[in-house]
Each structure stands twice: as structure tokens, then as C-alpha cells.
View 1 (cartoon, rainbow, N blue to C red):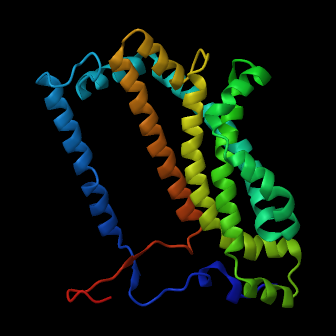
View 2 (cartoon, rainbow, N blue to C red):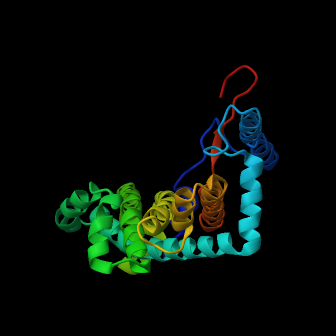
Length: 285
């Protein structure tokens, strides 16, 4: 059995000069973060109404909002968003299921590093968009094309973060756990995985955003549904307001998915808390 000395809360001890961010400060910061986007939207609206921006190419935010509401009421936007999210989640799940084991094998085992790292690094330099032509030959037009591109794009960010997390594990924790009789499954679950989770969650956030981008890009090539199809189809018919409504929807989905992952991360690894510099009035830590 592992003792409390190996609990995750001791992996990152508190240091003098650092403190957890108070909850009221977090709420105040969240409110302040909304100021600059609102100012930008206001300037955009003013420029569009004054004719500085051509509404045929850059419609006003109010016009985009009206188009978005119309798309929601007809169910068109929700249908396309649901299809894109389904592709993104399936591809993300496949990429994650491959990236995390590969990352641990490369990060923990010398033989895994020798065998797996060279081909993975070779494939990592290939952009996902360049694989669309090959995927069209292999899978044809359809959901399989999108899932393949998304899984390809999601694999590498999560793989790199998992390798980094595995290599950050302090050997003394593993040696101490071994000396206390911890077996390999217990060692993986109680020592290796908790110490790697912060880096893995960072990879999750990057890969999840990448999955949404991969879904939209792949849907622009011959698909008949999805947000990528909606954007391309609107562009063909010069429906700029609908096109921008689809783009805004992608941004909102990405933001909500990121917040969802942050919430899961805070609840899953409570021992890894964000810190901020505690600076007094004299400027000292």
C-alpha cells in the first residue's frame, strides 16, 4: 500500500510568494475579460453602419446575429453543429485512445522510445490537411473521412504532452513506491498517472480544439452536412451573414468545450491548483 507521502497533493508543494487565486478575484477577472470583445464588437458595428466595411463581405454583428437566430429557429444550425460535434468527439476519442498509450510507452520505456518515436515524429511533420486527398481515396466522401482527419490531428498534441508528462515523473517516487511493495498496476494508477495528468489535460485541451478545426476543414471537401459545409455553401451563394454565423458558432463551441474540459480538470485533479504571485504594496513577493 502507498502511504500519504505519495499522494498527488505532495507533488507540487506550495512555495512562499505564491497563493491560490481567490474566488471573487476570478469572477472579477472573468467580467473584465468581456470588456475588450464588447468594445471590438461595437467598433465593428459602427464601421459596418457607416459604410467603412462592405456588408456584402463583412456584415454587421447585428446582421450576423439575425442570421444565426434564423438558422437556429429553422433547425439548420443545430443540425450542422450536432454533426460536426459528433465527428469531432469520435475522432478525438480515437486519437486519444492511441496517443496516451503511445505517449506512456515512449516516455517510460527505452525500447518504446527507440521503436515508436522515429515513425511518430516522421508522421507528425505531415499536416492533417495534406492527408485529405489520401483519405478521400481510402474512405471516400462521408463521416469516415472526417473522423480519420480529426483522429490524425488530435493524436500528435496529446501524444507530445503525454510523453512530456511521463518524463517529468520523479524517479524517487517510483523507487519509494517499489520499496513499499507497490506492483506495476498500482504504481501506474497511484504514482505515474496522477503526476502526468496536468500535462495530459493540457494535451486534451489542445486536441479538443484541434478536433473541431479538423471537423470543419474535412467537411469543406465534398461533405453534405456539418458546419464546414454550411460555411462553404453560404460562401458559394454570397450569403455572408450565414457564413459568419457558422464561423461564430464554431468559436462558441470551441469556447464551451474548453470551459468544460477546465471544469473536468479542476474536479479530477484538485491537488493541482492554479497559483498566482502574491505581491505586496512594496512590490515584494
